[in-house]
Length: 257
Image 1: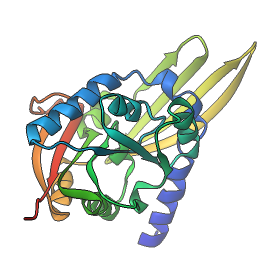
Image 2: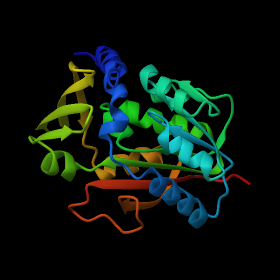
Image 3: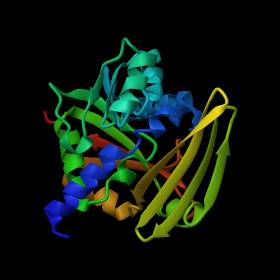
């Protein structure tokens, strides 16, 4: 499969993801968004920057975007899933949400910080796409601005969830999450049943994540002109060990005098 065909395939695949899953995403994702927003704020403090405009890249249903706005930032969100953004706009009608693929990010100006949470870059499969995203983020950041993102680690995708099956259940939904790890990709099959009255409707979604090695991410970041200021174990300031499941990267764009 040629490089251009490969890019076309992955773009179409990613566009289809999170379509039906959008309706149950918030029910299944148990995340402390307030903690993540507070972590970002502390990162900015440690970097001695005070961003006003903050982009939530891959914002999904906008929960984190809302938390950032509650903390006083002029936050806005970008996501490629129209279904996710429809929910985000319903939850936060006062926040700007833009329907864009992060590989085609095109803003009207620059912002003080960009954050990207909960595996967004794991869904990027191609190295050239990854490098392009870093260049786009650098382009749309103010001089001295920060880009903070996280990925599920290679250890997590290969050991913690690779080739495992998980069952998720609550009062309105029942889901089965099956995984198959074929380095460096984790192929996921999600089947979920959503209750409406006495009837359950079944949805199925296929997703794929790539396990990026640390040196691949830092090399792409530095190639785009970022300084790698820190790599952390989850949303903490502890260094990651060999069994860290989530790695958070803090990048700083060079400040020009």
